[in-house]
Length: 459
Ligand code: BGC
Image 1 (cartoon, rainbow, N blue to C red):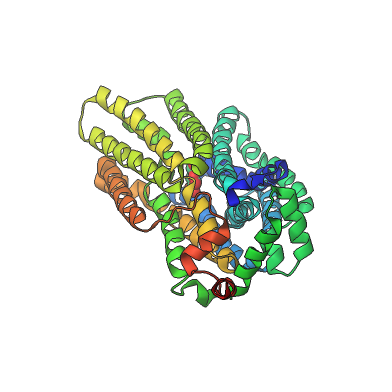
Image 2 (cartoon, rainbow, N blue to C red):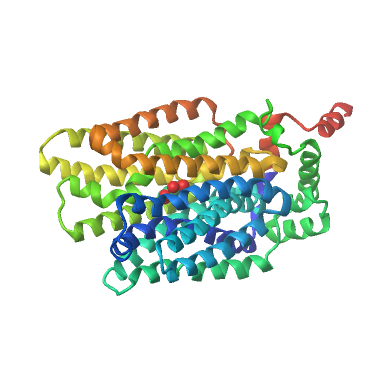
């Protein structure tokens, strides 16, 4: 049934506007390395102060995700996205005008809150407006935009590297996508599942009609409504026998995404290349741009495959590639042969990022938005996103000291070991969600809703 449902052009427009949140997420992640070169001189920042400029955003992103969960359930995904874009705008202005260190930290914290809100609400919104047949592709537009945001940030960093007060431009430019998103989302509708949960059936029908070419509209609405009646939507419910396992998978996906070290490469690619023997500023810029381009290209390749090939095969292929790359980089740093080290680190890092982009990159954003039941989906997704930002914070805080204490080789071997753990774990527990409607996936976890069980037993 669901295979006959097609995505309309309108749903693509909605997904793209929502995914501008991903663009800002990526941009604010990538821009800090370029801005930091100025900030440490202009504000005379110590190492600790520099670290706090980076980590303050990760801290409030964690808080934002925690708040966004119940808020998206209460007021809807769309309004939270609008609130995030307003925070992005205020944060970008605050950062670009910052006269002092404290002001700078305040700006980073505002942007962090915005990222936490948006990274929770955007995948939910897209998953709930998308028809099953294109959900993988549409939700992953968000991950694509994250990677494009990172790449744009690298290019902006490069462009303003020699400009007086260049960092003000670097931070300030984020206003443009945030403003476009804010204006767009004010006029766009809420997700049909949220509208039905609030009893706004006529509006929900109109959105379903506009977002899909669907011969089974009435049936879809009945199915969504039956599911909604079944769920209570309390915090306690999250840890029940029925919802708990799905929540555990959602959180693990996010935590493993970070603990396998992606952001050490995103943040520190230039340093890693320099340690491998490449010297000079152009090598550092080349390293960042190379990583950014491979990330975008491989995410683009992943987009159409997610709904064709399925989530499990993509995740396992990606994880295997990451593990091989991590151990190759680790081995290369053990041997003093400089040429071999240079080749292995370049190829290793590119294979690592490319493999991330087809597996562990998109899956933690896609799968939780599918497997968590509607009424608790907001707060449960919020918790999984807390797992993302919290573990991002931990890795960012300890990476440099790990390199100093156990060395690059052991650090990458550790990421590789965590990758193996992830592979074994997800092989055992991850369900395939390709081509299934959100309601069919719900039946996998929680059994058929009572009302449908009753009607089928009457037949
Ligand atoms: C992760 C980010 C990471 C980015 C890289 C996202 O899915 O959550 O932490 O920087 O991918 O593409």
